[in-house]
Length: 179
Ligand SMILES: [Ca+2]
Ligand SMILES: [Ca+2]
Image (cartoon, rainbow, N blue to C red; front, side, top):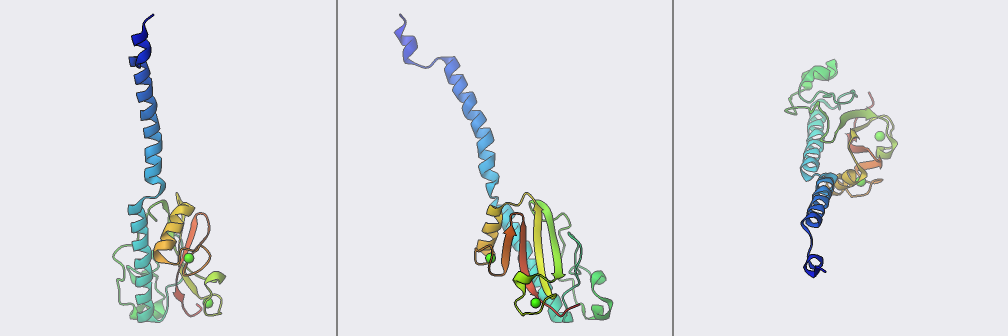
């Protein structure tokens, strides 16, 4: 009876364990790594704040927020082509260097909105709510909660940043006159 063979691991056993561990590492480590990508969160937060700041400056200059536009479209921060003609002479930008036409860091879109959105109806008048939405792509509730914690109150249903839907975040910008 060869007792020495029973005491240690054979080369084959060691190889099997190494293979299993490397497969686990390959599948688990990237998943943890992408569960919340801090650099993407930082970029999204910077962009959201910069949209809001830029839009506030437009409002100071023109007394209006730009009209609603489609997803991934600059509402008139880098050029005044989309600003209403009767107030375009007041436009004193560019207010933003570049609008991210490729959308937010997780592959979905940013959308500038100017419409009635009752959760943000702070002044009691419907139809003048201005917000930035971020939706689609690989957004998760965990990502949206993290952004809410950093920029707002951490509660999905209260404050200036809300995300009732799993992949849809809305960030309050202001309340303008009704278009
Ligand atoms: Ca309102
Ligand atoms: Ca909130």
